[in-house]
Image 1: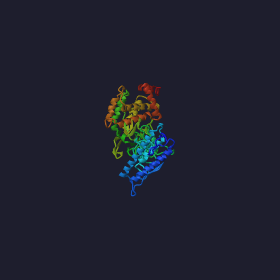
Image 2 (image 1 turned 180 degrees about the horizontal axis):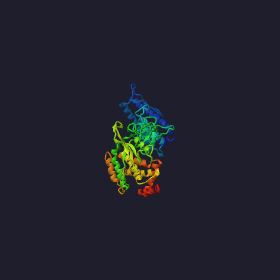
Image 3 (image 1 turned 90 degrees about the vertical axis):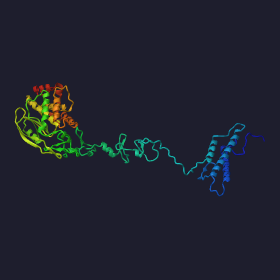
Image 4 (image 1 turned 120 degrees about the vertical axis):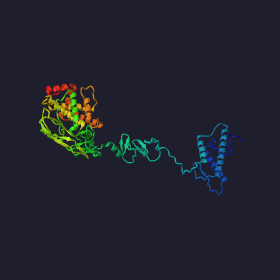
Length: 504
């Protein structure tokens, strides 16, 4: 019989005849593989061995937990060498085909992989796989910027966090509560957020309560920005008679003998008796002289209590007084006034031991005396003196029967001008003796120079004059200031003398 061109090897190979299918070839090869493993087991094992043979089927494999020894590794190595030799012979036979065809297909690669997998099993049994922890979809912690991996995590604002990385922006501690507050992109404990954003009363230091509509309602001083509960306006909370601030529960005010209260800052420069006020009074007279407005008469000046000032107001026939609290008065009638002869001493948070004396005021000219409330800071006392001295100057110079808005307005302008020389930088081009006034008044200050607290008080008194809401004092000041800015002080005063009104 003539040769056909296909050589059949004595060992079976992974490639079948031309007409055989992939399934047939695989089936035959798997049967041969079973025999090969069986023979290998017979060579190496006896009936007394505790090792069970591995079973290989055509399509699947089931592994028992292996028990490995040196003999097992030798047999496995020998079986692997036998298989590799069979594959090599099969490949050599295939390359010798006379018609040049190779019957190796893509499916043959699968068979080779199955054989290799069978000979090199995973050393771990399938019921005890090696743990594998892939990254949780690449989630990055928004706090530490590291991979979150496995474990507990938080999701908030489209970002993920380790529990220990989701921290309050205020205190820096982790947020463990189920509820938290958010400001922009920053998380807060609810208590921390309330502490930062909910306004506290600067009197009782409690959170300002909400009203019936659920809104936070509070009062606020227009200059000091002191926030406080509305109830403190009606619960007898003390208010400083000078700066108008309410008494805080942790900073007690001083109580004056006439019932007024004085805060600690105003107390620093307060003038308590007539003798202490004399240097300040003379420096303000020098200020007027520097403005070419010399006062020819020596007008008496007295510091008095509130009751004495109110009694003097009742006895005064003319003049407009700033209610509800009048702090100064330019007398034109003869009266007997109780003045303060010796300053009180501090006893706890009260000023006690003040000595007074009655004094008969005789009218020698158009002005009898100037009275000022005691216990006010130096700058406020000076502003009152400057105001009342302008009343005296107008009467001494023959300005009679002026409209209250005109008279009080121009007096406020002079008070404001004096305060500016004390608080603001001195303008050397001004035709005034502000430098001399400043040096004289500085000597009357207890510390020789004005502190930051005193300067702040001066700014407040300037603010009070500029923003007074009354018609005579507030409206009159703004009209007088506009006239002085446009025409100058001297021309404005001349126009008032001729017309009784401000120039337009």
